[in-house]
Image (cartoon, one colour):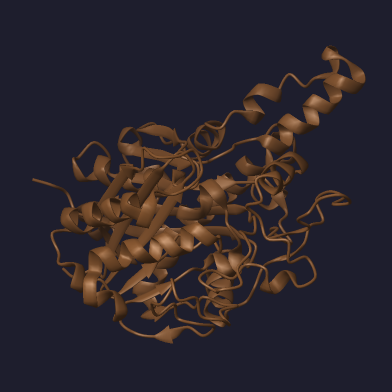
Length: 413
């Protein structure tokens, strides 16, 4: 018999706030976390704005000496995981560690470390490269460090599917618990790619917004005048738990995970397939996995990157699957506030779906000013709405043609 899987903890490090409560308050208010880049000198860069994490003190979560041996993306992962476990009220002394796992997503991993150490190699020679360079940089190290910190000896993986990474991580965690191979999994993702190389690379692709004079309005998903995505950073972590295990310890249940779908476009390195047919199949699979009708879905947290093709084709995919109901359900892109956290996007947005269900509130798409004839759904423009959410989908679509959707529902006994 399949186990039921529930969300019992949420931890967030984000451009709009640290910790679940600060984050959710900003999301409800429609606050933008986008501003001028401060991590490096942007002279000569076409894009000069991003969603940086502010007021983050790593030593609040990690010993100073240990922190020096980790990249920033691992700092965020460890901090958010600690917050999620704290929020879940798990007693780590009294759980079966062999059935306690960590599965995280990251699209790029320790890019900041890579750039810093490469500069040392060029300027000071090979002997000056840190002995910690490799374990700081490799993308699996966030999951590794979180498992060490928590004593989690079960499933331990890192998923790398570009911007779908964290949603795949959450979906895979759901399936592992569902089949009984774990009781608890800490999942989601972390990213810290606001670096010269990443910003230069995405800028060269002409994928990023150049609305440098008005950072707070640069990310404008589904708006006719959108001009590219805005990079964000941080971590979104959920504690997923076997329902029986959660009930036994009296845990607060935010939502139940009931569906997961993934697909490949098999089409192009960076462009989505025509009319979002890959996104359509991922959502359809999630709905079928949950054994519900498409018309049961109340809210979709869209991938909604604020790029021309993504927003147009994701809208087409929603209309193809949901038919007339597409115009009745709510669709919003919270990337309008947080920016695009790349491999961590699905982690943050999975947290938002769980909070949306738990709080009966649908967050807005801010900066929505001019209607695009190709994007004609209810994007919850500029102001969130109080509404019961029984079923919510989180979509993530990545370079390489990766598509992933998870489906959450309001928990009922």
